[in-house]
Image (cartoon, rainbow, N blue to C red):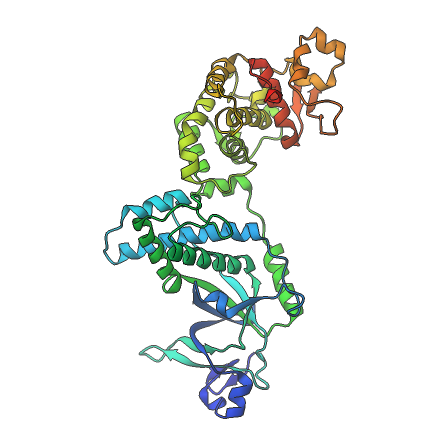
Length: 485
């Protein structure tokens, strides 16, 4: 299917094919860097598979997303996404340095484990292969532009790999992985700054939670060895396509990014062993408290087993711990000091009548995730919010003591407040609730749900609804209105 140059597969050319000064100049075979590659045929198309030192990849690659620099075959760069990848890579490099010590029989200083706990340890680290293209290579083998190389053979004469020499003109144009490429730059900048200044960066490439702090002598040893890992034995795997034009690059980008199926959120959280919030859920809530956890939600409330969907549990605890809608950025240094307070909340939640029972959603509104998010919001505001009241500790104790007495039944008229007339609110004893709720004249969403038959069904726009439900629960518990602050 592909022509050969002597006994070498195209586009590799041996020295005999590049033996004149003119051809060498045309091919750009100066300042070459050797790489060992395996030759494969991805759905019939010839590719190189190679390992590149972590620090080296940015030097030999480029991203075609700058319209002034040439044809565009990429989306715009998302700095926040790249930063999250960079933090993951930093953890991976520290782990690699630790593994290196284990492999060589050296003692492992406690600073390695301490930093990994700050960063967020996990059982394994790996990056998926990056996909690149060398544009100026003639796949058909016609004309100049071949890559100099030769075959590597075993003692028995079998082909082990090929050694190729990539010159300055053989740019690896990134088709899939520009955020990983940018993240490697951020990591090397971070390591350089830490090693040169002896302080953790406070802005820009700040990949460590304790920004601006002096680096201890023990920590500096870890960062030096992580830097050595990035320069030598920690590598990135790259699949290199050869000679694709811009339309082919764009098609490849589309196929790599749009044909895959997104992993279900609950399954992803179940498999994730890195985030301390998922650890808390598995260890404390499912383990110690025995809260039943499932990966899928029963569509019909009559089939509700009482188990909580894992992705909902994650969202609830993200609010309780971080006041965020997701658990990204959670590290043991942030989460572990807060676990006792959050555990106190869940110990009271499981005491709510009918919570966790068969057909729980038909018996108590507390089985609906949006109500749990409201309780999580109260917990965060009374314990970790910078604007919490001076007596917030006492208020939180009162909240926990009185929580099982709150009427979480579907018959509580409070949940149907926005569907009632002013007279009906007065008759239901809800007159004082108005002082806790947002002004109804505003443009914010007040459609929190309604009573459908015998059941209160809250709406799907949880971010609009749970702060209002939290205000209702504040009123029920006699806590001060958040509008008094």
